[in-house]
Length: 105
Image (cartoon, rainbow, N blue to C red; front, top):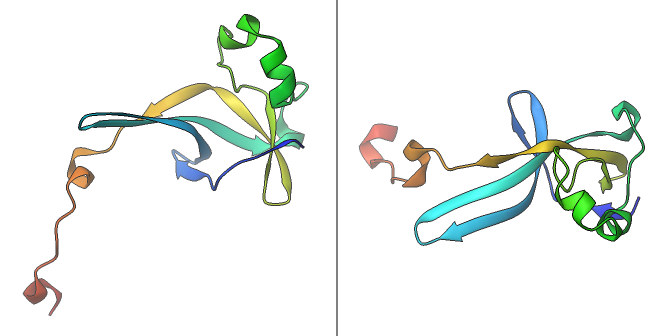
């Protein structure tokens, strides 16, 4: 497998991998695809290089540019599947607060 991915995160009983972030002023978001073991992918995985060579065909795919891309997570061969999702920070976690020392007693 050609590409390696960073550690996935779990959301709604699935593993997701960030493929990019957006930051404008105070607004932040993460663009992510699900990651599955290659043996569960119903299709032929494609490398990043092959995907880039497809040009606009890959960029305008309904399930997104990274759909079907072969990657490695640790020693496991995996595939990214779309469509992509955009993750926004939750409002209650956006501003971390320090715990009061007396709350811990």
